[in-house]
Length: 277
Ligand code: AMP
Ligand code: ZN
Ligand code: FE
Ligand code: FE
Image (cartoon, rainbow, N blue to C red; front, top):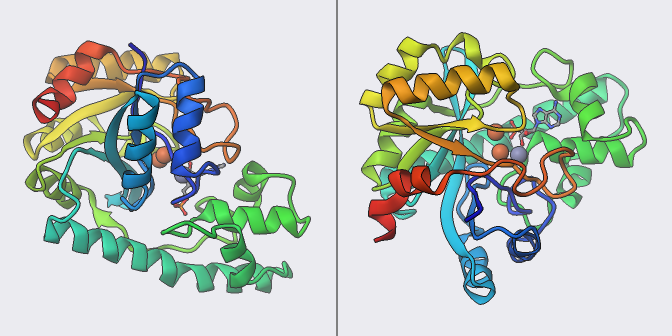
């Protein structure tokens, strides 16, 4: 059984519609797929219907933008009630934070002499419920300033680069508590990618577990062999579920093909068994 628990559609910053994503998952030989768009659940219905037709098991998920001690941390949530008001309201605040950031990023890019507009960015996110830096990257690519999303981040959009602007995101501990309250399970996404190793220490992860954290995404394309081995041992010590996934974004992110990493069926059962029953 091949299980991929972290993917994005064009409802956030992936390039496949939810329907196309399920088609690709089928072609890649997956049996179970979670849709985890950034800060939105709008793709769930379309993906679930497509998965039903294709005979795949669909897991409704999300990747929530959070802050922990000044660092951006992504939290995967699965199987929660999307109508749970406190969680729904917090997600709306996070999406508002994205809308609020966009004009500031555009102004900074304009100040650097890069002629891109909010409309250019929106043209690259026609059916997205959230605007993200990858869409700004697409506008920069189209205007010929950079070759691809990767170069746009490296030059302008990554933290510390001149086009970067801060935004509101949920507090990590609160996001874990909200997913739990809403009947779901939470997993730290790529916990040790891009510097978050400094704030997601063993002690912190242990404390997050007591707030309801269920698992760690150990096998992620951004983790090397050293991170994976250490995180796996840590998850085993703390009795956390171990997941593996691709973080597929369609053509929006190279080296993240569907099924690039998968989750062991036993771990999947530990994570979601009681919710699937
Ligand atoms: P945002 O949602 O605006 O914070 O942007 C985060 C998204 O940008 C995530 O999907 C990341 O995978 C993607 N991303 C972050 N850093 C890079 C990078 N250096 N190159 C390409 N994509 C990136
Ligand atoms: Zn993304
Ligand atoms: Fe992420
Ligand atoms: Fe992701």
